[in-house]
Image 1 (cartoon, one colour):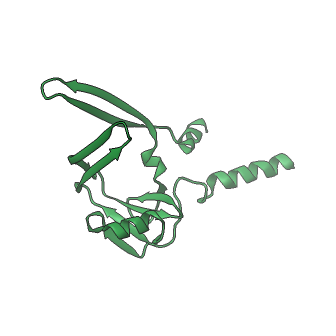
Image 2 (cartoon, rainbow, N blue to C red):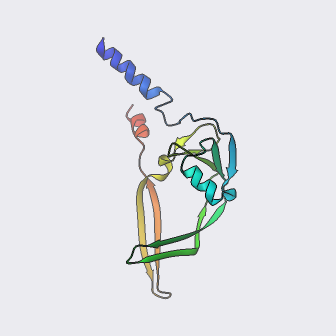
Image 3 (cartoon, one colour):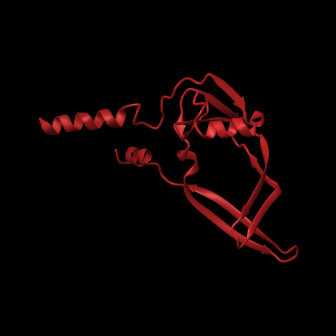
Length: 152
């Protein structure tokens, strides 16, 4: 009897929407284009102050990025040649300090699913213009749910 109850409990947890890949979140009441964000709103969104707002990232949108870092030993400046390009239209939200991604504003997945994995980095030196080229790809790590699906 205990074994049967244990199997039922595991089945409920495994097939429950709460524990599945997609997460049910509070309703999105406002959608703002990525290109319309200002510094104040961006920081408020990242702090989770507006869980009802989704940021729309349209395919093909490019955002120039200026990256500055000072380690005390080396300073890094990537400006103005660094850009972020949206490869597929999606929507982003932050709720309780956790990031979520959607492609339809209805089903949401943890952003960790899209931004986790093992980075692959290649370094090359160009002697002609004395520059260092850094190429990086993110090799996705298998998701726990995907591994469980393959075993069953």
